[in-house]
Image (cartoon, rainbow, N blue to C red; front, side, top):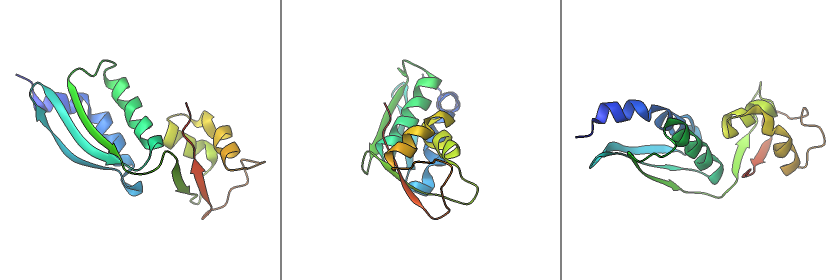
Length: 130
């Protein structure tokens, strides 16, 4: 018999990743057992965020045989983001891609010659990066 609390603990980083993107429209609708598997049902706002959730799943267990997930992507592939005070593209890259090193791709996708010249309130588009 599967242990719900044990599976929740194992996949806590996945649930936390979805919740981290709640300000952008992500949500967890259910976390329960489906037979011998942990069942996570929720939604994310873009393929960019879905990829971050997938990364979290694979870090917990590359086979994820004990996980049943229904995580719908409700929006486009790209993710919109509004620059906040204190942001830089490396910080945004770390949040959405799990590494600060994708900032050149963000800059290129937004036609920025200088990635250091961003302003609070500026809306950028975060592309799907393979």
